[in-house]
Amino acid sequence: MSGKKITWIIVGVVVAILVLSAIGGYNNLVNLSEDVNNKLSQIDNQLQLRNDLIPNLVATVKGFAAHEEEILKNVSDARAKLAGASSVEQMAEGDAELTGALSRLLVVVENYPDLKADANFRQLSDNLSGTENRISVARRDYNEAATRYNTAIRRFPTNIMASIFGFEKIEYFKAQEGAQEVPKVDFSE
View 1 (cartoon, one colour):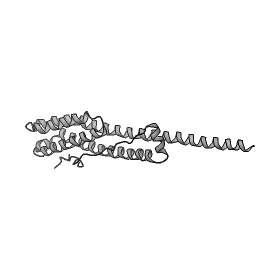
View 2 (view 1 turned 90 degrees about the vertical axis):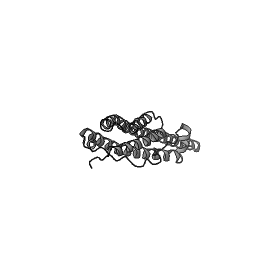
View 3 (view 1 turned 45 degrees about the vertical axis):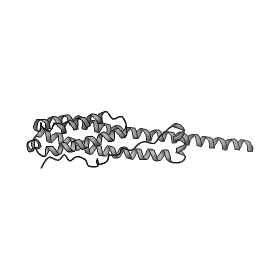
View 4 (view 1 turned 180 degrees about the vertical axis):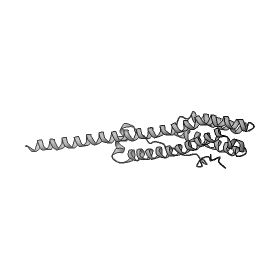
């Protein structure tokens, strides 16, 4: 074999390695991006479940505490705001507002021992508590997936591929100021 042929073979092997590496890098970014989208949809699912529980909870409380109309309206308004969220930031903001409204509602419930003893209310509050825990897990999972993705698009040489194909940084799901506390929904006292 001549030296020229060997050079062309080496160039061909190097190009093949670069092309295969590029394809692997691109596919990895696609997988990471889809994982982030999947985790975000899990947050949506849990927030929707909580939104579905709230009308029943509000209706149950209304029967016992009809004069607490302002607090019930705040819960309904916050629920509507969360349902209309179209971005991660708006979702986090709506979630924080709803969490605060639910906290205020649950404080009112403390004044109604008959309500706390109601089986329907207890079941709803247990379901809400479980949903709050699942929302917390879904947020954590989303942020972990976003971290993996954001790290991948910033690391060399994948950052070049990310830039070429338009992979952009994903926002983290951040709780709003004062929203770190999950509403207490234990009414067994």
